[in-house]
Image (cartoon, rainbow, N blue to C red):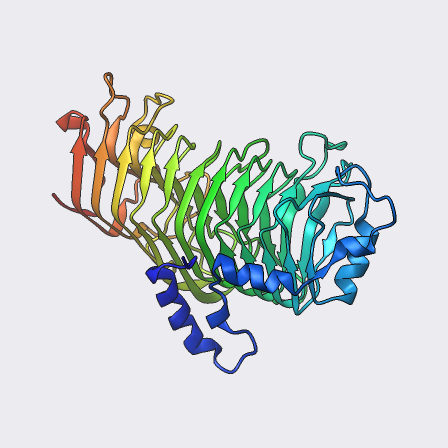
Length: 434
């Protein structure tokens, strides 16, 4: 069976219209298990480079030997046993295919560094990594400073595909997509297919800068340790970063922080497109299922859309969905639709703002020059079926500064298990159609 469903193939087709003429073939992104095995059979086996009497239990550092093989051969397969890697990690070069066999894994040697990665892809292109199995040093890490010990680090690269990556126990993020804030170059055409990410100390996946990024069929759990502890965090660092054409489809999360965070506050000083699609996201037990924030400033104008569809948020500690500081102008159109929120506020907050299924509010410490809005919410089921319901409201839209909302449309909201008087806390400027 192909890894990509109809949604993803359609997105690839649309993207292909902009990528015609490039060497990277989108038709080859989808691979069957048999196709991967056939390619792997023709790859150079890095085991042949190891010294006589090599160990197979991951207790001897073979970083330099494996790196020499990666530098020499374009298509390689990792030894079919655990291999210890030091803080230098492994640099993946352009035009490389790297295969992990059934028993292959890379284990990070415990270190005291604040910044490192097991697999490092910086300013490279045309890379495919198959079945990566990476184990970080989170629980044996020797230092206390930093949060940037990544499983996979992708910086200013293009045409990169990860098939079935399995990443766990990292000191920082499981997978990190960023830039160096110097060259104004961003990641482009990044595909993360069928990922499993467990026990990251910071985030499962962080997207700092990227265009045409596809995350398909992922599971991210147990992100905890240092903020923000999210499953997926889409959060640019500054105005030179790019967040455009981010497609996330069928993602399951269960972490200490939010399932998915979209924070555009630092895209200051630039005008540009922001397009994000989150389809089929489910979260169980996170602080929030979804957290979105975007400060409007006079220094930039963002256009585009953020579409949240077919989400399922269960047992969140506070809100199922929290929208904060989302200004009504100079922001992408935000649409949330066809989703379900069940048994939020498991931590029993007394305030409707933190105990509602969906909350839209302002941080009074942040400067917003205009009203909040540019949001459409439709066809949402909000349910509390616990013996003693804990949700304080279905919807809570409140502005601490009293400037209220504009261009906010809410329709097709079904609320169950919350007494009628508490179902809707709405301020002026919200157009509610029951």
